[in-house]
Every structure is written in structure tokens, then in C-alpha cells.
View 1 (tube, rainbow, N blue to C red):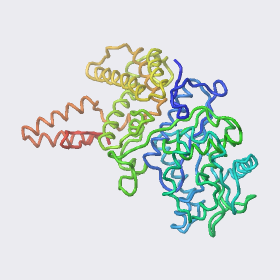
View 2 (cartoon, rainbow, N blue to C red; view 1 turned 90 degrees about the horizontal axis):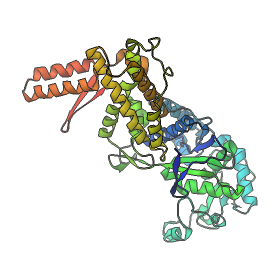
View 3 (cartoon, helix red, strand yellow; view 1 turned 60 degrees about the vertical axis):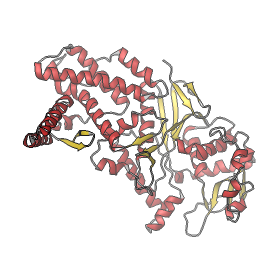
View 4 (cartoon, helix red, strand yellow; view 1 turned 30 degrees about the horizontal axis):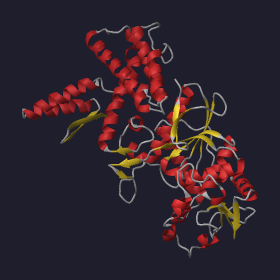
Length: 486
């Protein structure tokens, strides 16, 4: 089973071959730290977290780097509004980032370089571009000469001549920055300091770097000239990643990355998420409303990572119910292992071998361009079977399947779920979760519906109260009754 990936650069799916056998150098374009992370960040961070986990699962040694953009006009604007500093704003939202990601179960990267900590590397790269004729100074600014890089546009598929059409209508020729450029397509590598702005000394005068050069320098400093995977959101393909390629490859003469991977965007009720539309949701707002972080992970993983996903109440409700199913399977060994009495009588993670055919089916799916939805299908099969056996055990005192085989099924589920970052909080769940299975809850909801039809509202209320006492909330709507565990 060969892992194949869709490469944005080549526009085709290719076998995965690393620069150094058995090792993966991976860089994810991280967040600009001027605000709390939103659902789009949640999707990207979950996707690349699971990609990293899966690569490690199939035997690769992964060095995973994720940057923070801590020099940016948005950060500076927020600092001005708050009468603060760019550093203080960045530090506050970096701290918030780690809090949010911990709640989502995101494993920390091996390193988090910051643009402000990479200033020497940034200036060195600009200087090399200048020496090779790809950059030129202009009154304290430095610009990249786009037409000097013959392969410009190879990632996005855009051609300069096509972009030229109509560009004059969108350009303000009176703009001082425009007047400094030799060509409208050129972009800033270094910006001269403006009064009152943070600035760093450089051979071109006090100033700060442009956004694109920051990532080129951080990749090179932390991972070298050529990496295996460069990841990020699809909105970064142009101009950010296109410009990274132009900057890095002009200096090194080597590919910046062998595989360019991009996750799709998040919509909210079919519309682009934006503050102006009032549908902007931060990760902490969502989780503070009581949505289980594992349901958020499941929601993200049920879609192919390159396609857009639509965040709706119904989608989160479905993901929540799906997580309950998987969670019941994950808790099976802790709830029933001792009763089933395999070996020493206590089941623990790693105490049984995995089911090879099941693992093979899981890998066969995920090896097809990180098809996590296909991998989830395998998890649901295991979880539903364990839930069924748990119900039989509760009602009949024994299971249909041998304890040894059940332990293997459970161990396989725990392992594969861990690859996707789906983990149950064992102690809390065992002691506080309802004793009702999903099937029992659905049966009581049906009984309640029958009572309502018969206008037996006292019985209907009794069933609702009974479920509420067990930590299960019912939500009635025109489409029926949904439920979730508190």
C-alpha cells in the first residue's frame, strides 16, 4: 500500500517519496496572531495534526514546524486601537492559540518560529536575492522583481499576461508604493519604517519584512533548502505560497517543497465566514457553548480535506452523535474489560495485538490522499460492534464474541482513533456518563414521541426529565428530536 498525495504544484496525485528515506520535513503556514482563532483555523490545524500523526503511525520520523506571523499590519492596527504594542498583542494571541489547540487535542509542533525571531535569516535571504538580481532597493523598501523568475505562477497556474489584463483599472498610480516599483507585479520584501511603527535595522534602513519573505526564511532556517511537505489553506496558494517559491528557489536553485498540500475552506450555512456577515465563530466561542472538541475533530475529518466544508448546526449535531458512537466503543474496554476477564482481568492500551485486516483497510483508505472519511468508516464499524456487544453483555450477562477477540477489536479501535486524534476522557466518562447506550436513548425518544401523540404529556415530560437527569439533553425541532450528552 503506497501513500499517494494530491500535489497542488503538479495538479495530480503522486506516490509519496521523501527527500531522506524514512524522514519527513513538514511546514505548516500558521496563524497571524492578531485575534482569536476561528473555525477555519480549527480545520487547518486539525487536518495537519492528523496528517502528521498518520505519517508517524506508518513509520516516518516527522519534523513538524509551524510558524507564527507576529509582524503584520493587522497586529499593528490592533495594537494602536488598544494603545498597546505589536509584541504584546502577538504574545496574548499566541497564548490564546495554545489554549484553543490544547482543547482540540492538537499535538504541539516541534518548533514554532516567529518572524521577529528570524530577522537575521530574513535579511540574509533578501540580501542574496538582491545579489542574484531578483530584488532591488527603492527608497528604503526592497522589492522582488517578479519577471526575473521565469517559473512564476507554476503553483497557482496563473500567468502574468492574464493577470495584466484589467490590472490598470485596479491600481492607484498615485500610491507612493506603486511609484517605487519597477513593475506592478513586484512585491515588497522589506518595508521602510513609518513614524511610530516598530522597526528593525537593516542594510536598507530601519523597517520590517514583508509577509512572504518571513515564511521563506523560517522554512530555510529550520528545515533547509528543500522540504517534503509544505501545507496550508487553499487561500494561501496565491500570492503567498507562489511568492515563497519565487523567493526561495531563486536563491537555492532547488525546489522549496516536493509536495504542496492545501486544505479547503470553511463556510457557515453556505456562506463565507466573515465578521461583516455576523457568522464569524471562534474556536473558544464554539467550545464554550458546550460542543465537544472531539465532535469538532470528527466534523472536520468527515470531509475530504481538500474540499470546502459547511459548518451548520445540523452538521455539528450529526458529528456529536457520531462521536458518542465512537466514544462508547473507546470506553468499552474500561467499562467491561474486568468483567470479561481476559488475561489478568484488566484491559489496558497495548495489552492486545491489533486486527491486521482492519488496520490494512484503514491504511488502504487513508493512503489515498489522506482519505480520513474512509478511515472513519472503519472506526465506526468497530465502535458499533463493541456497542452492540456491550448491550448484550448488560442485558444477558455474556457476549456473542469471545473476550479475546473483543479485546483485539477494542485495542484496534483505540489505536486507530488515536491516529485521528479522537480520544475519550476515560475517568470523567466512566464516572459521569449516562448508563444509556445510544440505542436505549433512541428507544426512549420514540416512547416519548408516542406519548406526545397520545397527548400523554405527563409521560412525555417524565421521559425528558429522566434523560436530563442522566446528562442527556433533547432538542425538538420541525425535523424531529435531536439529542446530545452534556
